[in-house]
Amino acid sequence: MQGCRTRSAYLLAGQSAGFVFSYGIRCGTSQRFRCGKTVMSTTRTISTVRVNGSRWLSCPPSKKLLVSKAIPPQEIRCALWKRFSSTLPTITTQENTLAVVKEDGNMLEIHWSEGGKSQFNSTWLRHQCHCEQCKQLGSGQMLVNPSSLPPLLSIKSALAVNKSVTITWAEDGHTGQIPLGYLQDNAVTDFSLFESIQSSSPDPLEHIPEVDYGDLIRDKREILRWMSDISSSGISIVRGTPVKPGTVGDIAELIAPVQNTIYGHVFQVRNSPNPINAAYSTAELPLHTDLVYYESPPGLQLLHCISCNDNIIGGESTFRDGFHAAEELRQLYPDDFSTLVRMAATFQKIHYERERPVHMRYYRPHIVINSLGCITAINWSPPFEGPLKIPASEIDAYYMAYTKFAKLIEDSPRKIQFRLKPGDAVVFNNRRILHGRREFKLCEDTDRFLEGCYINIDEFKSQLMVYHSMYGTDKQFNFKRVSNQDFYH
Ligand SMILES: [Zn+2]
Image 1 (spheres, helix red, strand yellow):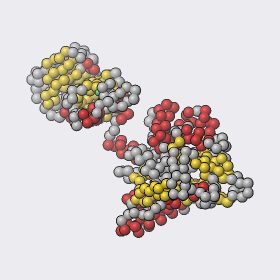
Image 2: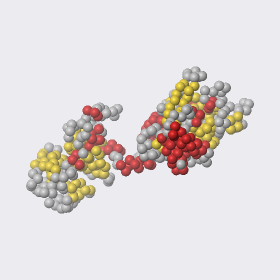
Image 3: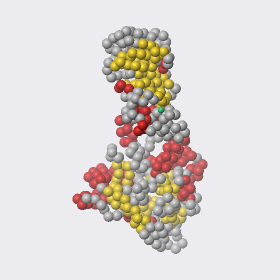
Image 4: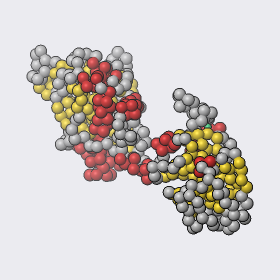
């Protein structure tokens, strides 16, 4: 082995230990060479080297070859390797960011200029190609049909230049670019994956955050704060909204379009003589989530108070964090928790005596978890339960578990209860926060009038990401689980 000269590119050919090229301040004579970081080991053989993008130098493995001329490192591309063992066929570099091809071309390792490194599967990279042939400018949609690609692809060469890495894949001969920023954003390790799933568990509901309607209208950053609160706490109150019908739709539109349901675009929660829903009476409403008989229950619910006199007796709104209740159940009664995760409850809305008859039934568990056991949704709606359809041997266990969960929901000190005032609008995640109200008595000249509507959960999540990108200050948004059944968030 030969020594190295500062800021020169060297090709060092060894007879039995393979060879290495390296550049930098100082190279050692051991099996590993350094340029700020370890770039490669010396257990492979190069047979040709490309210098300055055009010239090919032949490098017989049996001879030592020293390129003593100073060559910018990014201009060096090793092209063809004779392998002694499984290390590096290609090494390329742009300033301090290095792209190193490893494992017979099956993996690309990026050494970031700010430190650290990430590894990317070669086939995964082919599917992320950002070249104009593969990805449509503007829409960002993929133009290449993944099934038209070989199932597995390896990397022939890679070069990190100008904030992107240019890769040539061996099997289809395709050359394309991927922005380094994109790779940085989407780098995943098994550990980081686990960490992100764990940390996305929402905080238990301690108090209800508030925001002023005027601030929301004036300042987009307030809308971001509002949506972030809804994401982390599951609930928020908007104060100072106009006290007139229709306002709830305007508030919703600050986030996303109103979601239509069998109760219409905007629904009126007001005592009525022949209610199509118990909510439209004075009866108590136990804590519940809405419309669980839909395949996709509404994500956010808004309730806007238009009228509620002080001399109405009762009628307080109640809320309970369903994720917290389920975590309590898991801790106190793990077997019952498991039963409510495994067994489907029956939810239904079957009602023919209404303008447009409805016949909906849906089977789903009360508690939904992902593969790591994180709770991703709560389905709890006692007034809309239908006939249980589970194995006979499980029925007793189901009802035992059901009763325990119901107690943890309704009899909890964590249950929040307060009276909405005219001009208040409460917004909450319908798949996490259970809501209800106490029975109330109307006296003469009193009215309790709320208007409500829903927002699709994915559109809320989308708008939160958009606002975070446009008005946020943190680089990374710590996404709390929004309960849209996304596997990770
Ligand atoms: Zn491409």
